[in-house]
Amino acid sequence: MRVGAIPETLLERIATFAGLAPTPVVDTLHAVIVARAVVVATRLGVFEALAEGPGEAAPIATQLGVHAGGLEKLLNLLVAAGYLRFGKAGYALSPLARKWMLADSPQSLHDSMLLRVLEWQAIDTTEDFVRTGKALDVHDIIRGDQWITYQRGMRSLARLTAGEVVRRVKLPEVATAMLDIGGGHGAYSVAFCREHPELRATILDLPAAVAAAAPVLAEEKMGSRVIHRAGDALTDDFGDAEWDLIFIAQLVHHFDAATNAAIVRHAAEALKPNGRIAILDVLRPDSPNARGQTGALLDLYFAITSNAGTWAADEIAGWFRDAGLKPGRPIHLRTAPGVSVMTATRPR
Ligand SMILES: C[S@@+](CC[C@H](N)C(=O)[O-])C[C@H]1O[C@@H](n2cnc3c(N)ncnc32)[C@H](O)[C@@H]1O
Image 1 (cartoon, rainbow, N blue to C red):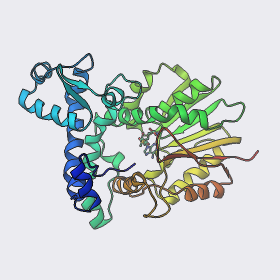
Image 2 (cartoon, rainbow, N blue to C red):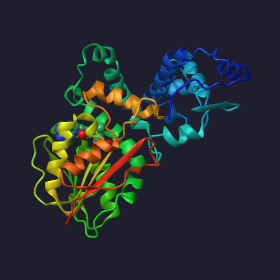
Image 3 (cartoon, helix red, strand yellow):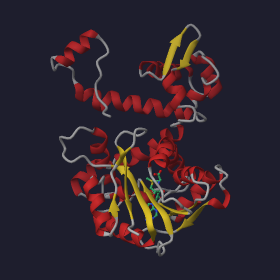
Image 4 (cartoon, protein in one colour):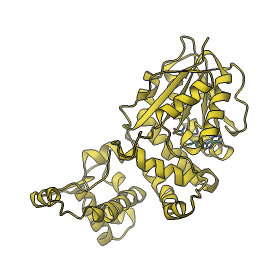
């Protein structure tokens, strides 16, 4: 998936074909304005205000307590960007907005949109990172309620893939215990436990994350089948031959290779014989020329936020082998193009 200048008219198509379209302006100005507009609309409740039916700018502005003229400009951009339609009855949600932007839609990205504001703070430090090579420690700079925004935002992405992940990650025949390292909100643990009635999950996460994620997990009503353990994956003991599945999603991009290799070694000891480890993350393309903007841009983003980045499939498989585990074939998720699950089994 890539962002870029998409011609809308015949003239623009010709200009693009002839190399005359000023693509860098679209990349750096248009993309940013659309991004801000979508997030502002989410924060102000614009999509929710249109959930029941179309409306004109003025009454919606009164309902939301915002300036009618300002809102109209925003609504017009959302029409141009494909989020809204405009007709006789005024502004209406497009199918895209109805699917992704409403808070109670099954595929809702509402909470993910609210997380953008936090991510933009990190992205603002890109130049410092490139000049100095010094990264943020993103989990050290999240404060107070931002932890809730973070956990809810991550949950909305996890929910998109959780169904496919539990279908495609094979567990041992009898699986009763799962450790979800850095599992925060618990969406993956909940999905695994719903799919496997005998399974119970423990989510190991940082104390501040657990405090923010506890009410989010409670919404799932899993009771004692999915519990949190406040701790630190870098220092905690994962146990000895205790788990049928150790699941690690979107965490290894925060750590360097030696740290990840150590986590995998400890995890290998903590797995029961025939137990599985599964690492879900964006994989780094083999070369900068490889197709896939997502992998490359997240490699930079995770470097800025954690001084690490994405990892290649071979690197993760190497951590597995060094820990005495037998790697399986990578699972490339259809529900999240660019995201894969690397699995391995502890020999019996
Ligand atoms: C990007 S989020 C991923 C959350 C979830 N696994 C998912 O895929 O949606 C990273 C999670 O790792 C947690 N984390 C970061 N450093 C950690 C550490 N040292 N020990 C345990 N958890 C950690 C964060 O608090 C956060 O919940």
